[in-house]
Length: 199
Image 1 (cartoon, one colour):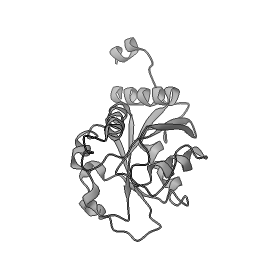
Image 2 (spheres, rainbow, N blue to C red):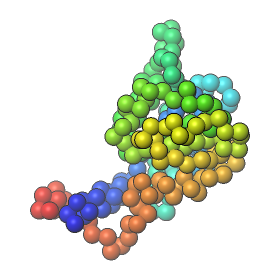
Image 3 (cartoon, rainbow, N blue to C red):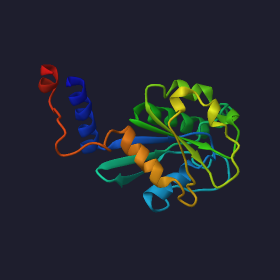
């Protein structure tokens, strides 16, 4: 009972303060397209050129009672960029910092690409996060094998950020994983450290 109240309290604080969600994944997987779709306007430049996003871009959208701060990061390459590309290195370093601070991770993968684009080093940085694996470009032939995904990435949803297919399913998953789907006016919560200690 006490643990449930504490969990409800964390959810209440998330609703009040908002949730920061980092959009991460390989370059050109559709992170910027997804951010633009959720924001309802173009915030990030979208092209087929790998590494278009070199700085972080953010937008805020609302999912019923939850305010979601979306941060589109520079694509984290499987291999570090060449030492001479200092701009790209700085962008990737900033992406890692954003990732560490986020409450929620939206790992955007290209459903039209094979699993070998999934960076194992990246997984080590998100093991303790709330994660939704977003398989983007579901309007194209599927090449990605979800059966090979590690357990921590098993919470998947297929979408097309280009035409909006599956977006409602993604939003519902976000509400569920953030704990707001079942949160109501009669939910028991505590707000102060003293109240938490009494439990």
